[in-house]
Image (cartoon, rainbow, N blue to C red):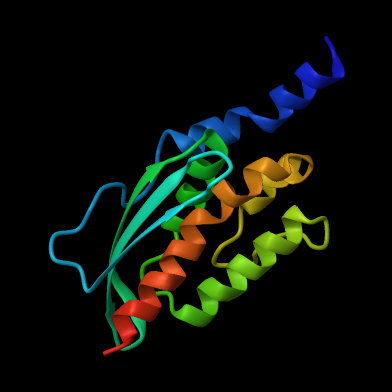
Length: 148
């Protein structure tokens, strides 16, 4: 087995593929307070996030994810913990994930733990934007929902 092939096997592990196949809150909301579509220009992945905010926290959430398995796995990890979260918590998760992908940290802490499964993607910079899409779209949607 070549190094490249073994790297790809590690990159697309069973755990990543399982996460990609079961994205929480997948779909769209009817009449959300905010809706944001983000696209990763390099690979073409897209994520559309719909949400409602109550008392500064996400009360309703849906995401339509059209991304590679890595982007889907990232969306699944976020979606599993998103309800009840606020802007600061999601921004901290985004920043920790970005640092992890740069090799400068271990990834988000609770309640957004689990992103370490994406550590093999560090060497694939062309996939980083797809991995970041759900968190970034969610932050933008919160900002829109909170701006009267």
